Length: 206
Image (tube, rainbow, N blue to C red):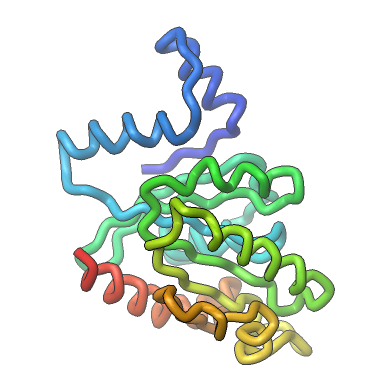
């Protein structure tokens, strides 16, 4: 199942069908209700990070197993990803400055956050940390598992996974279940190891 839609189009569709205006959280509640009626509960995963970090490339690597041509995400992409015996509903949210304030609209009922960092973008690693810290302060994400992907490790001169770990201040996350992995979405490196950890961690929580 695949869905690509902007927030404006989503709300317009809801108004057309129901004659009402709902928030994204309300829509997710309705979708979750019907999913519960007709099938097993899917785990809800958010892919977040600054623009250009490789979020959408990672999403489609997981979904179709290969690199696909992508454009900057304005709004969100939604895909169903099946890994081993778990089914994930993965939401890839745009990372532009104007879109980040709306991330919180999607936090409700989230099981895990995949936070993607462009390891080659040294100039914005501080901004990436600020967004991560702000996100983790949200009450709706207090129990969500965090998986950080230090992406673009194939680019010469990029920050190492240890550098990214320090720059993001991950040692301060004493009560959060988290792990960081080095990845190259372009080459598909590191994603299997990361998904193995995430699947096992979420499986233990079921």
